[in-house]
Image 1: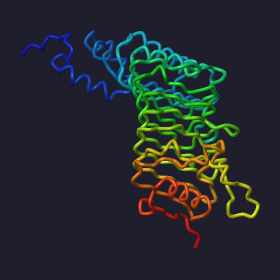
Image 2 (image 1 turned 135 degrees about the vertical axis):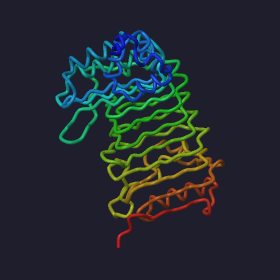
Image 3 (image 1 turned 180 degrees about the vertical axis):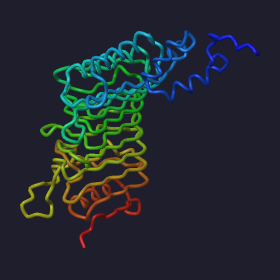
Length: 354
């Protein structure tokens, strides 16, 4: 009778190239990928060299937070400070466990040490059926001071409440893209000398008594949407952006920059307008405001309102509105004073009443 083949301790994956093993790990959930480290030093080395990490905790479906925290600490211990290109930190809770936010802080500090280039942070607390921003004044993140990184290029925040004097990214000299989505932004300034792309979108809320000043002198693209969901508060004040090429700005009905110019009781005047100095160098500019909204917006000193904005680079202006009212006419007046021809302006009336 033929003899049975002797059992072998050889790893059946030994003949596979490293690139294929990396591909396998890429499709595995984080905790399953970590468990491959017990298969041998080769697996551990390949796992340690992964440049993308995702930390995900959901208080209603994940294991206990203590177990999750131990898993996160184990990942940090095994990986060490190997460089990262991307990290996503998603911490969602129902009861507001303070340990969740402490863990978020520690993970941000860790990935910054790993020279992460793209960081996405999404902590939140469930209220009913909707994730909402969680407060961070009780358990401070590194954002209470400045983020410090010589490698960070992209940051995305969602479901965060910022309650600091400023969001200052001066110590991130390579930062090029910042996305703030569905956050509460109660700061005085957003500052970055290197930023090129800025998005503030999806229902962010702003202070009600003061304006956030945005200082991003190297910005080339701006997406400022103050219309979706609970976008209340005063619209930010844009400082000059001499390199700006493309801008989309939308003011919604919940924004406090409100004007009833069609009503006899309206008390606004030309002195209550913020001119578009920050957008004056844009080549493509899209301005959108909902019905009965003073799109121009805030109060500035009288000597500023007397000066026309400079729009020498502006080739196209798109204005979206429910109807052409006094607010739209003010914009047209400002643009005309600044040398913009009517043929360069496109006005789209939407949500017309029938």
